[in-house]
Image (cartoon, rainbow, N blue to C red):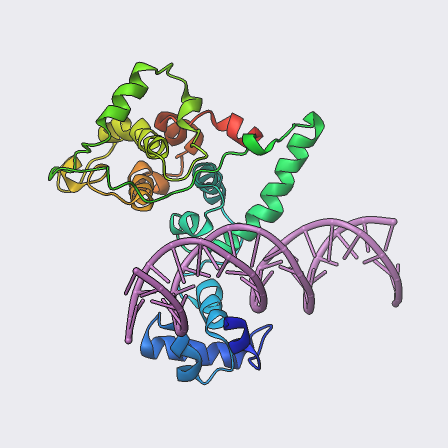
Length: 263
DNA sequence: AAATGACTCAACCGCGATTCG
DNA sequence: TCGAATCGCGGTTGAGTCATT
């Protein structure tokens, strides 16, 4: 349907005049309601093309140029955690677009990965590819007014009984859709760093958990965003000596940095 | 200098999710 | 509740550029 509608609209590279029209339109009407943008701006472009051009190129907060080492470090870690969820990853790397990060990964990083894996001829089977996927929490997951998780206690009890303290278990989501096991996997992933975070994070207002950093939110994407916000304090970014390998990744308990790079 | 291959990145496409009437 | 419209995402493509022969 959208394809039919796009017949007759201009495609391909954007001209400076088109950029100017789009920029002016966004300045006047704001971001969003993309279906109205072609009409408002006078552009002979589909709304998808307009949106993409704005998000990936015209947005004023976009940073151009090569990724810094810190950005690459962060990208590797976020990709390990989130998989190919580029929009989520981009949300954690200021100024970089999902498209840029995706392009970077698909060219530089995939190439490096191939070069490292090739000599070993690592066999990758379908079942060995693990990709975390944020999903909605079940309605069974109930939080009280303090944000304390209630309905998943049974799960935690059973898993702690069988626990072998094996970190790998924390990194293995179930393949089934929407199961309690999956919910438990996300809970475990987040819980893994909770204790350390409570030590590391100083809330501006000193309220700690009551702010709902971990327990008060039901949306996994929101939890992950909060996690990334607080797990990597901005003041550490500003420190020239700050080093992910030594200072953050290991103490968050998400595995060995070198192993991740070698993967 | 020309041909060819490799690489980069902007843009397109299809589809699932969400919103709206 | 349902279907249409819209949004937003990830995978993919292809034009332009650079490096090599």
